[in-house]
Image 1 (spheres, rainbow, N blue to C red):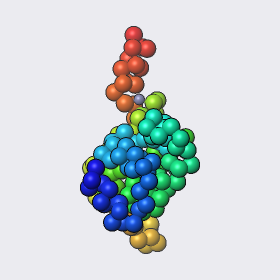
Image 2 (cartoon, rainbow, N blue to C red):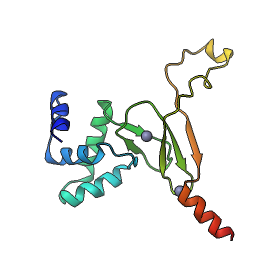
Image 3 (cartoon, rainbow, N blue to C red):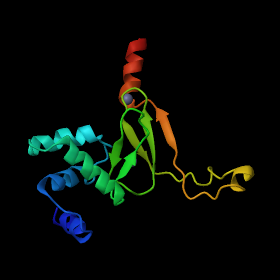
Length: 143
Ligand SMILES: [Zn+2]
Ligand SMILES: [Zn+2]
């Protein structure tokens, strides 16, 4: 926790107790929470926190490249404290998001007609599937 505080202080990020709670919640979190998820968790500790405070903090962190905003779910934005480049897979039933740390850069080589017009600077692959829980549910339905 001390390291977390030092890291953000160094970057000139104003740390209020609520902001700190958000950072603590996100630190090492691999569940790709939505702003609503984060808000409902912070509210348990700080009942007076507003959704706007949570949302603005997320935007600030995003602008400072401290978290990723993930748009794989068309209904809601999700947030990821892991800013290492990686890909995501989303369950089409329950919207659970998983991390994929494979490097697809070779497979993503652009065809010549695109390469003539664009110089690629990055790529992102989204995968869609059924998570293990939803697969089990499907199987039960079919039996
Ligand atoms: Zn699922
Ligand atoms: Zn992720």
